[in-house]
Length: 312
Ligand code: NAP
Image (cartoon, rainbow, N blue to C red; front, side):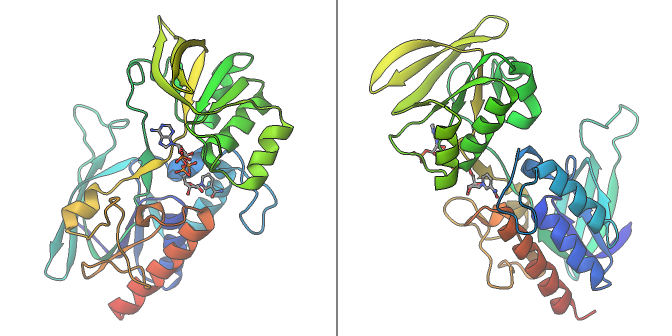
């Protein structure tokens, strides 16, 4: 059983930053992620508000953060936390490979002991929960423009949502050569003003007061039922991208008895400490302003607090 001072769960911007700060304090630190480092951050096509970079993709920034973190801590990817328990003087974790790496003979089972835990488990894509969404997943329904956009170059695409993600991903798809339209349920977008301007400048049409009620097709998506201003219509499209926000990935927090707010986000104090002694949290899982710079800041605070409280 391997022992660490601090184990960080989640290798997105918050977790990787916590890894840098914890490791630089000379605490023996491990970052564990259920898939590749980066989380939803990998999907951000382009950011123009991360200080120091006029424009950078999520993938490029994660690669830089991961390389920097590896100077100070270990990173274990594609590893799922099977169980996590509070013990008298810390935490006991059991892990296994993610389904991607698992074989019949080897599930990659390992055990770890940590003095402190930082939960940086982020969030997962919210779904529309409409007929056809699950059925056509990967056959015209997608949640990540940077991952799946290239399959729809030259084709008609509807993007559901009105926030920063939907706007940025629409611009990315347009730039790729997709014929993209935004479907928004209100008559006003939620995204930042400069993104609204960019949508206009790039000629991206917005279908206002509209919701996608059903996704239809045969082998692949070929249309949706659209409710526009209260009237249902059949609307031809080759793909539906969904970017309507995200839900907190709080299963491990629940297992540890960490207090959550009404939205399911982890409640922390100014030190990023939770109600459970030795458990800290950072990033999108804490709710509030979901921006990379905030996630990184919280990750730094969580790591410094964990180190200080351990009195190593
Ligand atoms: P968001 O800001 O929560 O916006 C979700 C959008 O989807 C809203 O326009 C909402 O409509 C719409 N929506 C929600 N549920 C819906 C449903 N069931 N049917 C139809 N439409 C629905 O989500 P997001 O754009 O994914 O962004 C998530 C967070 O990440 C935000 O805090 C955002 O600022 C942040 N983000 C940051 C960066 C960055 O750091 N550079 C980049 C992208 C996103 P209403 O407007 O009517 O509520």
